[in-house]
Length: 161
Image: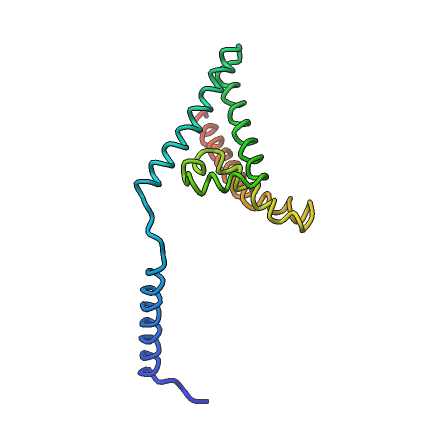
């Protein structure tokens, strides 16, 4: 077996770098340039509209005698349910494509990220497909939330002693 000399190895590495650089230039020609200002305005408008509607619904619930905390809980549940429903119909992706972070950042984005993998893998069955993929995103979030809550609880308990 022939050994590769250091010079040959360096030449191969240099050739790989040149190919990588050439590919980067080639790919950059076809990559669309994002419109940061326009995307920011769309995200702000759609996200603001979602928050404004949520606040309006919360105020309507409070006007009917529901306390602020419960009204906020109902609005949150409603936003999650609506995002899940729109994801199931395939509408949420179109809205997200237009609005970007304006629809992804609020809790609606989390609801979408839970439902979308479950829908994608529904052919694999209700347990190994939908059930397993439903928690592919929710699992780490739940673990992080529960772990943080336990840690904060321990700190409060130690401070109370």
